[in-house]
Amino acid sequence: MEVEAYAGPEDRASHARFGRTARNAVMFGPPGIAYVYLVYGMYDCLNVISGPVGTASAVLIRAIEPIEGMDRMRDDRVARVVARRRLADPTLERTETQRLGRVADHALARGPGLAAAAFGLDRTWTGMDLCDAGSPVRLERGAEIMATDAIVATARIGVDYAREPWATVPWRFAIAGHRSVSGPRAAR
DNA sequence: GCAAGGATATCG
DNA sequence: GATATCCTTGCA
Image (tube, rainbow, N blue to C red):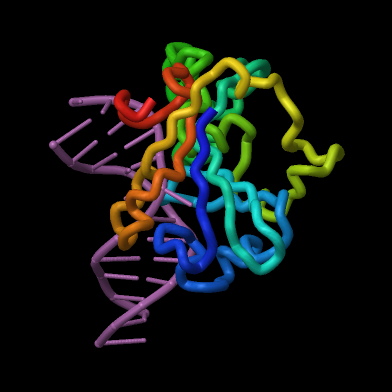
């Protein structure tokens, strides 16, 4: 639905911009591997390593259209919130269940933090082979959306800190007008 | 409009 | 070691 491309160390918006570190080491490895990082202290974001060994390029999965398993996505998110809360709060599970019940199916994975959450992924899943048919989360060939849908390309979101041209290069791609795409309405 | 939230890279 | 910053979300 919605992805962003990140190049290697030359891309000042990429986690690889400081070179190889403990966090981003997997980016420098082979393609098809998951790189999941924590952003803003509470949300995990899923990336797919995309280049040959050493290039450190990746694709951030910013949004997905849920096709099945929406109830489980809601249940998992309720369970996570409840588990993360230190003090026991008997009303928390109920209020969270109600809150997620109001979230439309098409909005359950709209946004990078939500897309990773929809698959129950956090940083510990970094290194998973997304091209292995035996992996619990994997990439598979889907419907041929390219044939009928227009693709919109915009600047990447949340990378204002990067120097030009990296802050404005149109490397965010989404299905135009799709309701499961995140970001400002003008960028859909 | 903005607070929550914790790891990370950098600087002292 | 301390701290500014971060590829965001959900509520006021």
